[in-house]
Length: 259
Length: 253
Ligand SMILES: Nc1ncnc2c1ncn2[C@@H]1O[C@H](COP(=O)(O)OP(=O)(O)OP(=O)(O)O)[C@@H](O)[C@H]1O
Ligand SMILES: [Mg+2]
Image (tube, rainbow over all chains, first blue to last red):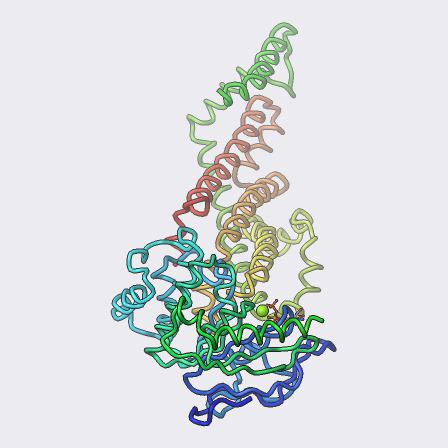
């Protein structure tokens, strides 16, 4: 469960356990995510995916074991780790415009007001929202709101991006567009991504590795290496024999889990 | 059209009242015909009594509201942000809150004497609670994810309060302040009627005790009108600020 030896370990779960009250939620998690690696977490609802992400984000301390970032235990939100929330309707501040929401991340790191404007413009342009800077979240579609969130995450200039089912509530077309957008953006910035999804194909399409979890309590069941070439493409990648083989393998795996 | 219909019944009642007073030729120390009330109102308005007395009452009510509401605002934020303090104070709050402000009038007279001081204190006491309770509830109801966002972005406490917590709760605080405004007027007038030689309530008491039913009724109607106007203005502001396409979407930043 370690990344290819060529990658420097960036995030490490070491024998992590967590219980809410007496109920164990995740059990003996050992997992290492390498620098610039894209790791997807899949597993049935309630198996602890969000819980694991929150630990890396410094929002939750495990009951036992350690979560390391850059070799040091995470003991609170790190500046370099950015969190993208699933529910976009609550992840943006409704009283701020798209630009205002991106600005929040810059304000948090004390970027001087004079420098914010151009940065915001650049970030919104990156996610294709140059013309929507003055719109409030309620005036934007779900896909656009998630784009604003992406821009806000990028404003942090993170080395790690944690994404909790970020595209789960979007329609198929928007979803594919955003998948490509994320791949394009992180290819440039070399950001490490830990990505939770319910969608097997999405996991294979995006990931360098796919980590499948068992529920009750959440455990690492199996790790799949995705040996598909980059850049990925919605048509050719999804028709690639390796993609089809992996998809088959994951489906079988899930079906066994359910049986 | 709707307003016309709504006004129909009161108009008929007034007319009936007026006619009845004349037909029966009532000469009373406790009743007055609408026309007499109107005349008394006009006179008191013209000689400035009503307006200057109303100003006194509003002054006490609004200062009390500012004092009580302001401190409740600050305390509610502290309670919301530091749950241990909330648990610590819970008992004290639950014991003090149900004390009727009217019951404190004797205490206030004893400690502060007559005048603005005691009236303002009593208004402050009674407006403190609704804003504390509503405000605390508003803060504990802020969406978990918004607070997570503040953490992930590592906002400092002050930035967290001004950029997330206050804007998120502003509409609810506004409602709390609107309700407390009504309370402040009620308490101010009550204190004046019961004890304090000041304001419109005192004027009302004087009119009643000197057996002037026309002025008494005129003042009661006037107080009602003042309360209604305040609430209408605040409701209007609330809609403009927080309604659909509310202006507050700019201000809250
Ligand atoms: N604060 C909490 N207190 C108690 N139980 C919790 C808490 N947060 C999560 N849980 C429980 O922990 C389990 C794992 O939750 P988690 O959100 O990590 O699952 P998940 O894999 O992300 O599920 P989903 O796919 O539905 O998002 C769930 O059964 C949930 O009910
Ligand atoms: Mg989840």
